[in-house]
Length: 230
Length: 116
Image: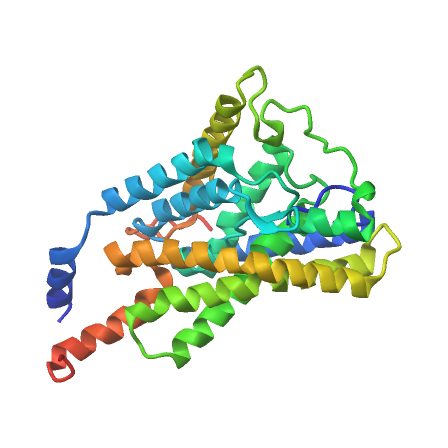
């Protein structure tokens, strides 16, 4: 979903740039609570994984493709604030070095791919983990649903930004329908990759998965009473 | 109570180093090798822009002439090598920048040298 230069007008790009700047600043403060000596290297690895996986465009039919955005994945693995930072670093490197995503659109892309996906993906995952039984096995499916929803959500945010500052005179209904439709399909890929990645780390080291922390401590309490163990 | 938890955890735990190496290897393989087989079709936004008729409003990228522009390494003719090398460089760069940033931001175990 990397927005190139020229899709949005200058005022909108400046505004998204300012919002993204503030969001990254707030994330820098928030990430302090999530990061310690062990999770800091993990954050670097998660960002590297997101960069690598974003290179893998998968076909979604009719001459279209999609790739992971990774906001939900990063939030679930290393925490939402750190997740925003991880994906932002990916987007900055992509824009400046790989000419992927416009330089004037960097704020827009951070807002869409780093902030919107983390906020929506994390919110949905958290709500599901609150509602679902407190088991480690619930974390990967919850993350997958969060990841799925985050993609059409980001597509809607783009449509909203285009309504405000799009440079071409096009039908917004057509744009919204097409963006939502295609990105719902791409969301399935996002969900699958997130499920596999979160599931893989959970299977070896559930304690490293940020979203699983509450679940693990509750499970430990159950084991200690020695009543609920089958 | 906490010691008991720690013991159960360490008994089963795979060392962090292995997990780190695992993630790094998967990332490098994806960016360095698998990326060659990625779909070359336009992504969702590009496709919609084309269909809806505003793809032309995209302007030339400011860094389009950079040495790694469009995920290919300048001066390397072989497509597989050029793309793979660009992917590996990008993955390592992101690892160093994001990891370094996280190390700077993190809570220090000592806590006395708080500069913020």
